[in-house]
Image 1: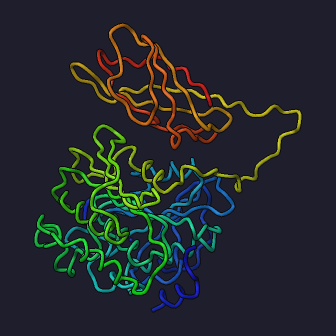
Image 2: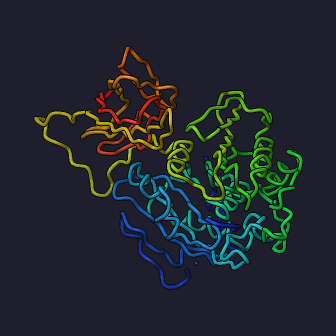
Image 3: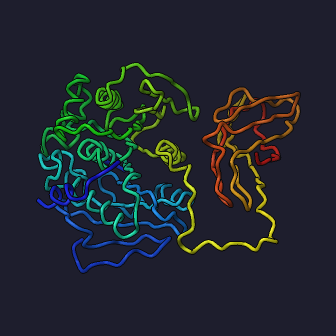
Length: 431
């Protein structure tokens, strides 16, 4: 489905908030962040770190996760949830570090002509070399390569999706700008930029043409795109989310009107754009009230779910799985659940429910509890909820029902409760 190595080998040889070339490095030790030097062609001069989970399939998926200006790959590793999710679902994470210096610090190049050229002499080509390295060293699955990034890293995500649609299956962009938004290096600093001064407005056709011209003649499948932005972002204006939507919906030939809208969390407003077959090709999520500070807690998980990585069975290549004796009973599919009080106000409160699998993986869960007098649920998300008197029953909605053995799905279900904030005891039943 994805790339042809011979083509890439030939091609590869020739901002904002939130460093490659020494002796050959051996494969990184599992479950620790390791730097890789001499990973291949590196025209952008990037540094590479890789996180390989203890347990993974024979051919694991790959996620590239990129930081914002002034930050580093190691910082994005420690400050985001992707490595923990990799432990849970068995995919490998690549953390590049940008080295190009701007007024905003080190940022990924999205302004130069080379950064807008497939196989050009800049950062996108270096990132693809990192992907190739992981495929070769860890038998990474070339059909399941994904990319995400925050701010400068989000902008680079859009560039990679445009330039290398045969490499990446999907991407999740936090606080980004459309591909080719920056005219040149002088246009990059926010103080002088036409891209991020709040007035950028091109037609969907113009934005879409920029993507199509990035790989002329390409007729294969395009990567699905998830877009995030804070409604109060003034550094990379919120208005640019709409420009990104226009770019990618035009690339897919979709209507500018979403096919569905919902709220994965109370302050997350999601618009989904699906094709005639019902597959969501683009989704745009507004973090209401958020500034230039994404991803927030839980957003990485939603990105992983958009990619489909939450359906992975991590497998057991390291260490090898052990077959139990025939007399050993099968693992018990038990589960536990805990209500966390997220916030409260005069007449209500928000609760998140974490669900943890026992010694066996869960295919689904049902939660029940009994409220004290005067309490009830006024709204909820990510569960089918019924009430009988003071007893509440909540069931998963499919995508959030699968939990690997011994793992916890944080915020598997959330709700708004009325009355005094109280975390009741919950009974969890595996289904």
